[in-house]
Length: 452
Image (cartoon, rainbow, N blue to C red; front, side, top):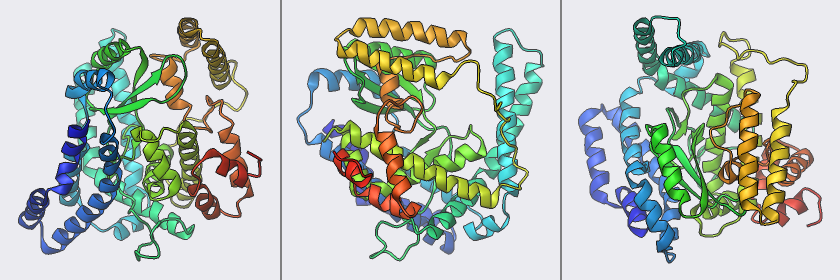
């Protein structure tokens, strides 16, 4: 564990690496773009170094050889390297940046509209090709494949401008709300770290939970290109150690700078995800976010702090995201998702999932682990019969989604407490400032007006 953490941090500590990156900038870019590269490099060092120090501190703890070493041997060839991705991203980002953020925002939603229209069509083509591969297709796979390649090439060409446009729009709204810089007394920046994200497929996440209770015990990042067979192989091998596991696709990731946001979503999801991932980095420099980082690293486990942090970030991101959308895209030609029926559905998925979670908690509280797992598998098949296909429903699944206190599947009262705190706050800024100072759940309860 210590060797891995040191290896991941070496690119930050080694002045030779830093000198080589700056030499690349001087050799590849004009004077103005070189300065931009070095500025972005410094920001990336500051943000990533802060986040990356957590696993280094965690590495100083005595390891648990029987589990950690076996886990590392199982996933080592599939691990995602943040350090390697950071270097490539910084260089590619500068090379592809041909216009300033200010000029991009003035273009309003034109390029962004094209990007998300292309994304919708790309998703459709992939579904058609998948159907063809399963023997249910009706189109010409060669023609579909050619069209897919052309659309993906066009989308790749306009991706940098789309990223920069949305990032500047988010920064403007954050600044107007008085949110944006945890070091405003020392840094004359309206938003820190600058909003910067990449529309790419994020790494996968391996979630590990104990079998006898639902709790996020450990998370590991895995490569984007991992196959389903490899996912299931990793899960099966790790579960031999007596835990519950699940490999998930992520919609966003904040442990790198720039952050990741999936390139397979609609506009509103993308805006909200970009804000949420930025908020995680902003909160890292506050007591709440730092405690969450300690929990994530296993230094100071606190599942309640994890729920509070995720819930706060989710609520704020939706509010800021709505403001961005209303200002820049409400009257644009961006393709909107299909309208959902307003009448109550015949089958309420969210209610069913809450009931499943409560039943599983009851089984586990009585020590009936195998019965709980059998029950979840039966319910997974039942959900599939209703059109809701979940690859794997287990303790790790609920441990991951239960971290979001305002998620329909959550049974934690923390979501209600955070909403009560938001209702009491005079503004979104006041809410975030109060929430960001929370270090234990009792702080939240007192701030929300509930006696601990």
